[in-house]
Structure formats: structure tokens, C-alpha cells
Length: 487
Image (cartoon, rainbow, N blue to C red; front, side, top):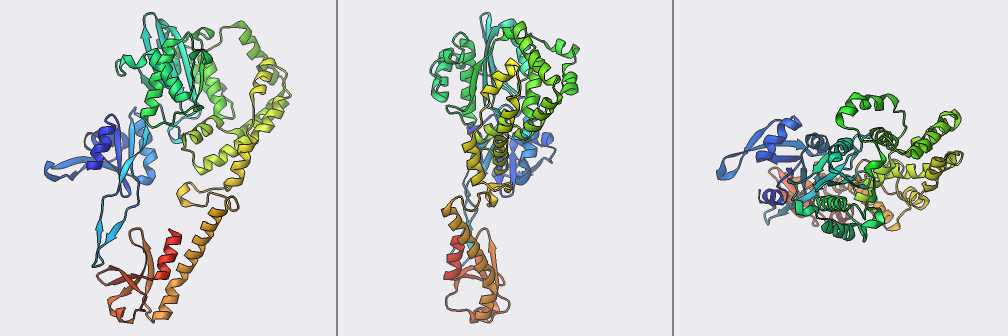
């Protein structure tokens, strides 16, 4: 409970999931809030002289589904995990003493900072937004952590509300919830420099958008506080002008039935395309030349079914490249997602070939920006098996032949496991004890178990490891050596 309180003190505003064995437990007021949202039973447990404490729990292997419910309800979630293996220490008499397993906060998840597919809708952006007003102007910083994008915008304060409605943030940071001094533009410029390596706001078009720069500082502070990786290159930073698009307030969006229109016309074959289409419909262009350029690109594909069909075929394998890259850069990509990233990269040359047939100006401009990463695709192909397991902890992720040291360890472990598998029969023959068993548990490792009735027949090299009610557990020098290789 001391560990629990220390974690809670560091993150007082979040619901703390505390790992105890095979469950994540939630205590006190957190449990009262979380239980009905997650759909689990609120119970209690004895807690010293203070009586019983409210609590609820969820299985550790299914935690993401329950956390998703908390995030969708707008809550911040703190994961406190066991950061070392649970183990006991043997006493002289063969019994064991337990010690407290070390725990620490390993993840902080908020509605606007998550990157995993389990918490995101593929066709919608997931913005973390900071916004504030000074005088007649407002500043907005909108960060899409799951795609690695940071957007800055300064606009008249009367347009702030409609822009926030368009962005539909998953999480919104504003005064007074965030102290106003944190929005200071000078502070924001320093955060951009220190955390993203952007020395001058003008280099990203934000030289005249100082209120947006101040909001960006709040975003970067928040990401850092919540254990999101913020380093130079982590985000693409750009400024956009609200004057380039038509403001649509909530009433207009409702009257035009834009959500229904999106569902009707969305025939995109990648999540990236779906998000782009939704963005375009929510912010119609106002500049006549830009409109004509976009319409010309649409007309070319609409009038050439063969080219359009080919584009559809070559884009499909690309998948959600934006979010795959973001998860990899944040260190949260699974082995399977890294394989999906490789396949997406391998699909890019075919997209480039198809784009080369387009003549519309805006398409050719976009095509010039499409670049593959063949070195990275090759590295991932050489390093990872084609069908890796769900978890890295299961092993079998790295391809044989990629790393000689790892191959040596894997081969040694395989050989040691085979030796241990043959050990029971060999020791029965050697000792003459037919009921001898070789076993394993997480606390004591591998052992040879013999009943009390047969201890007189033991070979001299048996070393007692643990005393049981019905027998004794032993280890031999050979088993200890093979155990070290396996573990």
C-alpha cells in the first residue's frame, strides 16, 4: 500500500490500476468511479486499522478493454506494474520468505495521448488541444499523437468555438484548468526549442501566431508529464490559417447532415484517406484556385476508371502508415505492427508508379512528396519473422540468422530445454526412484521432487531446495546449469 500511495501521489488526477499478481486492482474513490464505467463489481478488502477499503479489479491480460471504457468516459488512467519477477527467498529449513515486488508507473494514458488501435477510431483524428484567448485573438495547438502531427492556429476569438467544434478534441486544455501563465508565448518558444529542436517559430510559419506557440508549450508540457516521448523529429509541426477554410458551427454541421454525408460517400481504402476526407468536408476550401486544383485532381480520377481502380489496389496494402509510424516512434508498436509497417513501406513503390500516370497539378505535387524508406523496409524484413507472436515476451520474434549472439542463446536454450525434458527418465533410472518428478514453478525454478519415503535412495549430488508436506525438492549442479541457460 505504500507503493500504491507513492504512485497515486505522483499522478493524483488519474485512475490508478495497480498490478497485484494476475489482476490490476483499483482502490478507494478510484474504485467507486471506475467500477460502474468498466462494468465490474465494486467490492472491498480489509485494510489494517482503517477498516475495509472499496476496491475492484480486472484481469491483467484483458486490461486494454477496460481501460478503453475509462478513456472514452474522459478519464486519465495510470498503469502501475510489477517491474521485477515475483520470487521467494529460501530459508535454511527449505521454506521461503516473500518479499515485496518492486512496482512503478509504466504508462499514463489520457484520451488525447493514446496511440493504440484499441482506443482509436480509424476514420477519426484524435486531437489533444490546448486553446486560450488574449484580447481579441485566440491561439490553438492541436496535437494528433497517434499520427505525429502538431497543428498551430491563431484566429479571431469569435471563431474559436467553431474551430474547436470542428477539431472535436478528445481532450481539451484551457484556462482555468491549466494555469494561464503556462500559455506564455515565450515559455512556448522555449518548449519548442528544448523538446522539438525548433529554434525559431517563424521556421514553421508561426512567427505571427504567438498565442498558438504559447498553446503548443502547454501541449508539450502535458505530453512530457504523461510519459509521451517528445524528442526532435517526434512531430511534424505546421501552422494553418483559419481564413483558408469556411467556418462551420455546430448548427451548420447538423443542418447540412455532414456526418451522414461522410458515411455515404466514404469509399476510401485506407484509414488515412478516411481521416483526410472527413477533414476536407469539415473545413471546405474558400480559395477559388485551390478549389479548382482539387476538382481537377478529382476529375482526372473520376474520368479514368482504370487508373482509379489501380490506385485503389496499390493503396490498400499501405494501411494506416501514419499511426504505425507514430506507435513505433513512441516505442509502443507490437512485433505484428512492425511487420505491418514493413509491408506498408514495401507497398509504396507501386503507389509511386501509379501516381506517375496522373497529370493533374495537385496530384503531381503530392506525388513528388511521396518517398519510400527501402533501407528500413529491408531491415524489418531481415530482422522479423513474417508471423510473429502477439507479445515480444513469447519470443520467436527475431528471424534466425539476423543476429549470431541471439541465435547462440536461442540454440543453447532449446538444447537446455531438451536436456531438462529428458532428465526425469534419466534420474529415475539413475536413482531407482520410480515416482521421482522434474517440475518448474515461477518462484523456485526447476526442481527434482522426491517423496519422504525415498530420500534414502538419493544420489550424492542432490542439493535440497525446498521442503514440502509430502516430500522434498532438490536441484543438481547439472540442472542448475541448464536452468541458468533457459532462464
